[in-house]
Image (cartoon, rainbow over all chains, first blue to last red; front, side, top):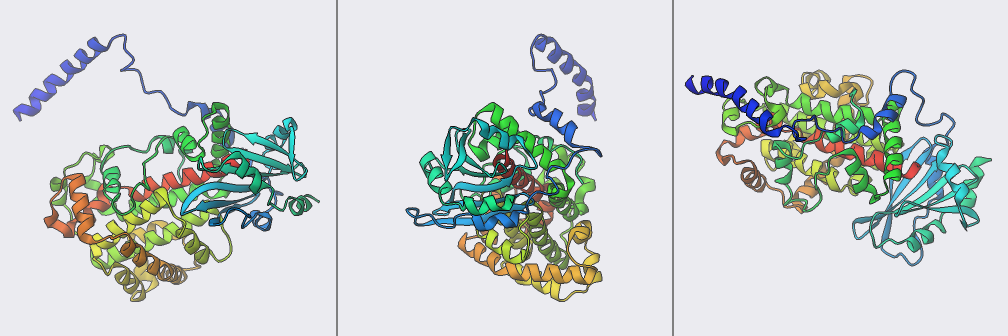
Length: 180
Length: 296
């Protein structure tokens, strides 16, 4: 009983002491929202009138599977494992020794055209299609102005040259026919 | 379904407390697999290895957009992970008014708990495993023979997903049911009817998303799913050296509890931790970010 009362009496005192000592400091300001940078897109993409994230006529992810390389010469012991398959998207993991070293993906940019327009700045080609370095870990190719094929490194051992080597082994010509 | 933005969910994941401690206590079984990465932009950086702010923004925006589209399944997956955790712990929530801080005394709590009947505990285990399968398909899509695809994917589980499976085996299998937990789970399912299953709180909480036209069909799905991953679970338990004793010893070191009230420990884990929801949100965020990073 006594301790409870004491605590009650002390609490406001402690609080005012805290206020006194911390005046001018940032400690009492509300914590900053760490992801405030995404509030705008949250407002635009939630609620009843929100646009679809994936276009209705995007190619089904399962149709992309056949164009992925399952083995690449010179990469013995690398496993290609299916990871995701959604409307307009398919992804495989490349594992080595049980660890993930890279991811391979194809997506239909009909759902997010900005992904395709960035290839206008491409200055080189892979299998005759515009290629681009994306960030510090990714390389992409745009096929038939529509399908983005990407290889992203997930381990430092998988270099830009490795990404190019794997992109060379996708069946990009076959993929381009899906746009016809 | 969850109304929070995905970045709020991931930013809100705790870095300490009983859930985190109880998962860290399993590091001996899956060493180095789980580092409890929390925070939305942190997760983007951790998954992709990218540091360029503009690219991180682009990836984050695509991830938020994909998550917000209900038809993409991510919201359902999060709901499943949250609901199956809440459903299994419903028996003790009343006494856990201060659960938000997870600052509760083990002994204070354990005296108020009743261990769950073995059958209810067995159902919980099987339903949680099936939720993993359904949530996996909501997140990753993989159509066709879902159970077969799931099995292939289970072999490739890593990071927080592998930790979730270790915790399922440890805290919903070994601790409450003992070494033959998988058999007990299957026996409970085989000796039951659809309506029995419907009396189980955990099942009831997620039944609407379990495939099957009626309770009987859903029971068949649960049974077949559990049967098909049972061997994997048993193999995993053996391979990782998971035993009831090791789990309890490591847990008691981590959360300062005595080993002599074992029968209550399962109930305690149920009410005091949200390990399914916690690691489930992490898995969902990582797969979502994987997709967004590929699509931008």
